[in-house]
Image (cartoon, rainbow, N blue to C red; front, top):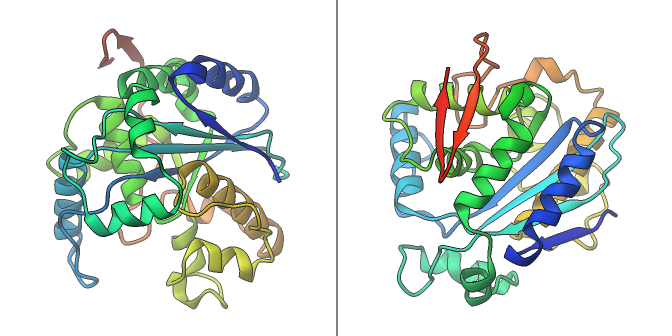
Amino acid sequence: MAAVEEVWNSNFHHAFHMIQSFREWFPYVSMDMEFPGFLRDTDRGASESVRYSDLKYNVDNLKPIQVGLTLSDTSGHIPCAWQFNLSGFDVRLDPSSAKSIELLRRSGLNFDRILHEGVMVQDFARSFMLTFVVGGRNRLHSWITFHGLYDLGYMIKILTNAPLPDTLHGFISLVQMFFGRVYDLKSIAKSYNGFMGGEIGLLRMASILNVDATNIRPHQAGHDSLLISKVFSAMKRDLRLVEEEFNGQLYALSSTVRPSARNFNFVVVPPLRIQFS
């Protein structure tokens, strides 16, 4: 199984240099985010507008803790997975869910080290933009998530350095601009027998597909992104997945996120201001 590289401020530039050297040959990027829980829970039967309102409230008021990225090629080969520890979240001062914090602690997250040795969020955003978005690169990769609505929400917050848009339509427009092709394994699973309509977790999905998760540390973003990548490859192989059928389908949303027909030009201006033209 591919290694998961822990990324701190000290090796941050080296990590993105590695990603940039691999990106042409590995067009799939699996992504996961760790964050301090939820301040507002969403009822299972909530409308789409309420669901987005809760997403916006939670993402706007909470801080991301880790970003996991795993590259893979069309055959499922993986060069490495990266676990970016983001400074900025202070477990003593910032809003969080006590239950989620305890889960993340049990999963191995060291909040003090992340706070003091982690990557500045604006530094991550700038390098991510230059690596995956600026110069039309946003059209070169496919992004793989598992129950990815919140992962995308936090990434939009990181990249724009701003609250989420007021409307779901505005949010979808930003996802289209930044990421283009997006896949959600939980949404895909709903279309196949044996996955309980998608109502299962990532580890259970991996087990059904006989994906080895022996060295995976659940609830750590880099490890989860690695497992997402392996499960996606197994789905393509065993289920003969036709990718385009599921492009833009996010679990819990009826609205579809598709690549924008408009060709956006991105300019990143320090400290971090994104201009569109």
